[in-house]
Image 1 (cartoon, one colour):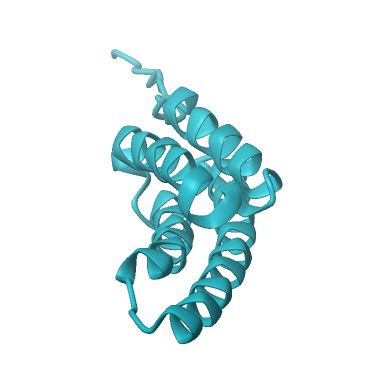
Image 2 (cartoon, helix red, strand yellow):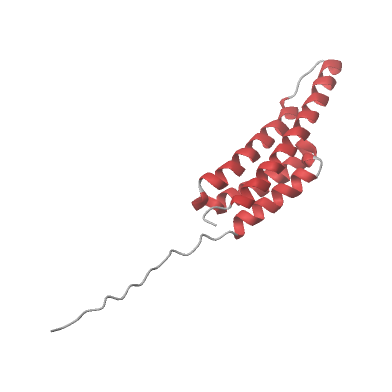
Length: 123
């Protein structure tokens, strides 16, 4: 394959689960802040991590030449999602980790080298 499509799809799916987990954490944070009277932006980090994880998955497919960077970022966002987005119910964490590892291990296909031999006749 000319692109790490499997890694990108797994990372996007993991990012969606992280986004759902981040939404739940943000809702809980909104309820807590309504009762306590102060608002903290830390509750919204899970949403940001989920959105960035989905973006990294898209970039894996769009710009495969930087697969190493996207793989490292996916693993980093998966680790950050654990405290801030419940790890996407742990399923998002696992999908994103596997997607990041696949992106790191992906290698571009070798170029097609066509060797032609011309038949020359001498008179």
